[in-house]
Every structure is written in structure tokens, then in C-alpha cells.
Amino acid sequence: MKSSATLHLIIMTRLPQAGQTKTRLIPALGAEGSAALHDRLARHTIGRAKAFCSNQKYRLIIRIAGGSAAAAQEWLGEPEIEYAEQSPGTLGDRLIEASESAFGAGAELVLIIGTDCPSINQSTYTQALEQLETRDLILGPAEDGGYYLIGFKQHSPALFQNINWSTETVLKETKNVAKKLGLSVGLGETFPDVDIPEDLPHAERELERGI
Image (cartoon, rainbow, N blue to C red; front, side, top):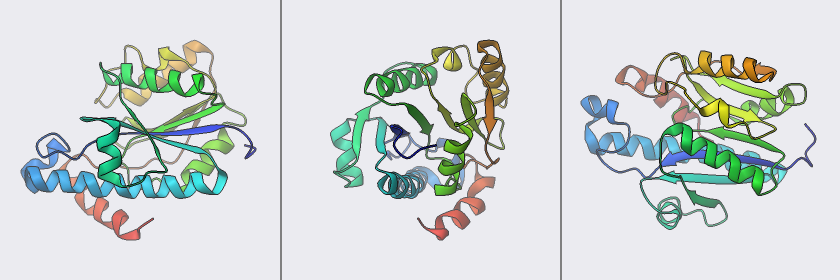
């Protein structure tokens, strides 16, 4: 994909509040420890995304839940990054609003990720953009049946409607919707998310690799 294309890379995350983030890890790490891991995962993901966007002059937007955009900037200490609050509603509602806002602001390409997959790196983004040269949609499959990345060239709300979020069928359902819409789909590498105690060794290995 030509570097002159206007890409918005959106990261969906939340403030690292004890008892509110990475709750499935609380039995292993405790509430404070789970929030601390979320903080590390978010900074790791954002650091890699920032490096990628800085090289190509792409726009990086942090979409925050659990607090204000100002609180997110205070948390991360990155004044050059754009911040916006996630909209109310389901995950699907929030993704629709984030996508609509990006295209409304002039994006030609949109990539959306979360902060639960520390394996995402600059190569992940480069390969996604390469696939979008010949595909309408790019999905990064997660080992749990969801996806860690979605990228597209047009606002398609149906991709986020009537999806059984947080289940092992999210990727399959999204691909089925894309097929019904007539959208061609490319797939990235399959990576694990960090959601449950069994994922912690992988998380530590990836975090140790740094940005």
C-alpha cells in the first residue's frame, strides 16, 4: 500500500483500573497485578504502533474506555498521540463509532487493534496493508477464535453487528458477514491473546522482546 494513503491506526483499550481490567487474570495475579499487566501490555502495544506510525506519518488514535481522553493522556504521557473516548454501548457499537469517526476524518484505510495481543509488531501492520492492496478486509486471527486486528477501506457497520463477542466464533461470524457483503478477506498470522492465566508465559516472553 502506498505510503501516501491516509491510514488511521486505532487502538481500543481502557484505563488500568484494579478490578476493571484483565479480570480473568485476577485469580492468578490479583486485582492490582492484573491491572499492572494491562498497563504493560498497553504500553508495549502502543509503543510498537507509535514506531510504525511515526515512520510512515500515519495517524495513531487511542480510543479509551473507563475514563476520559485527558485521563488517558495523563496515564500514558504521550501528548503527541491522539486520544478519544470510546462511545457507549456494546463492543460492536464502539467499533462502529470508531470506524465511522475515522472515515469521517479523512481516513482511506483503517486498522483497529486491542492491547491483548503482544505479538503484534511492525511486520504485522506492513503485511496487513499489503493485503489491503488486493483485499477489502484484513483480519488477524486469534487462537481463541476471535481476532486481534481488523482492517478495511470502507465503513461497513454490518461487520460489527449481531456478533457474539468474547466467544470462539467471532472470527468465523465476521468472515461470514464479509462474505454476505461481498467483501474479499485476507488473513494475517494467527497469534494468541493474553486473557487467562495459561497465557501469562507467552505474555512475558513477548514483553521481554520490547518495542
